[in-house]
Length: 223
Image (cartoon, rainbow, N blue to C red; front, top):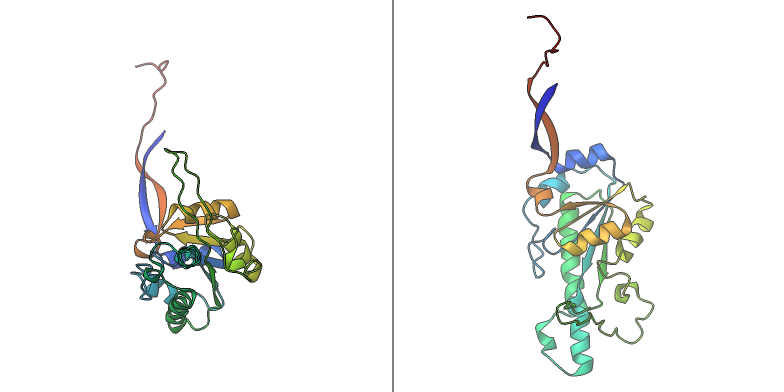
């Protein structure tokens, strides 16, 4: 009878990605690719990961930028301080810079940005307060970026990214730092890994380590 104990070892994420044969890698941006929602600087470990990816690996950046939607709501409803929030042009400029940073590291990678601008307030179950959707600007009703379906944890952005890449659910990986990222992956039926651990530590690979063998002696054997 073998006795063992669970231990954990870590494999570099890029090695694991290659071994799994993913067709599409989807990443949240703020807190995953960048350290914050105002930065275009790459987070720790991101540069090294992208430098090891195989040419042609399809990359999708899937990000909620509801501050744009909240700003529109404030401006149209004449409340709050909308100037404290980014507008669409500012967000697009930052995301383009993030994409350019990644392409500078790995110019052979097809990288597309998927962004959701629609704002949704947070629900408060303790008070029974439901989450409310902010309005979208006139003329954007058919713009997916302003659709409810694209805002995580809804799976719309992931599904559109998979369609763009021609990737199956098993061939798609989602990496993010928020519960909404994990919920999005589950809703789309794809594999999920947490950031920043994915870039900093790698992927954990549980193993069984042999710590000895016990031989049970039959009780009916003579002494």
